[in-house]
Length: 328
Image 1 (cartoon, helix red, strand yellow):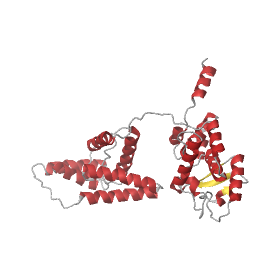
Image 2 (spheres, helix red, strand yellow):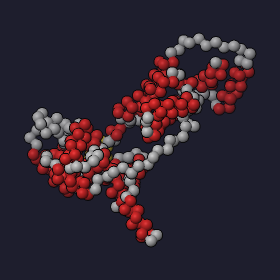
Image 3 (cartoon, helix red, strand yellow):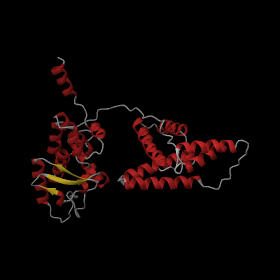
Image 4 (tube, helix red, strand yellow):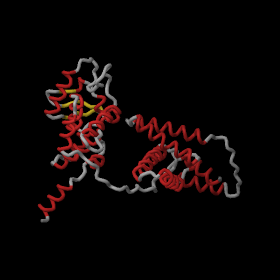
């Protein structure tokens, strides 16, 4: 209890004192309390304190531009940790978090990717607490990145894309597939598009990405023709670019796009047809054909270039050809 009190005092004074002054304060407190017995009187609701700090953290991330979907996930992961550990934020140690992550993985049979995502969220939260002087040092610092198995995710072949196009019986679906394939936009960006966002003359459109960031993406001539045919066939006045086929022709939502693509994929006898696969395919092909990684990053709307590299899967055929060319 004595050590906790000293730690709490030094933490509270951290923003007012230099490192040397903090060290001197700690020495004075240790000497002063050496023969003193301290009993804890629980008057502070630690759960309430934790929740307050979490709310402040979520507010900070919201200002930084994090999506509500991400914030909801952050909150859930951190609240679950609070409930399981049942400790005040200042009392949570590196060992507590390591034990929690190991137990979570064992009980839930979670993948390494999931556990590392949780580690990154904890790191962000406790680093913020440290930066804001709520704690002296983040307990996540000594928890290293969890090594995950690298798997080469599938992309669409030329034949696969043609099969999808041939399976489309609605001009809307054909335009939607071509737009995803030629721009690599996120499905969330696709469903937010309005008719007025499309510039047919320049073959480009303005999309709103994560954190409401804007960027211009480009589409090919085939997509232009299919989009024009689709819009000409519509009789509704909904400003949305893609709407439901039946009345009242509401804006398509993410779930609707995912379901429709999955149905088309099943008819075409293709596995795992989903919006993100078009994005991965575009990134992989662009880099395979020599497009600078920085331009691919901008095209996809990534803040960090490391994220772009995850999408750029190495084409094994290119590795084989390069081996023959440079090594023999």
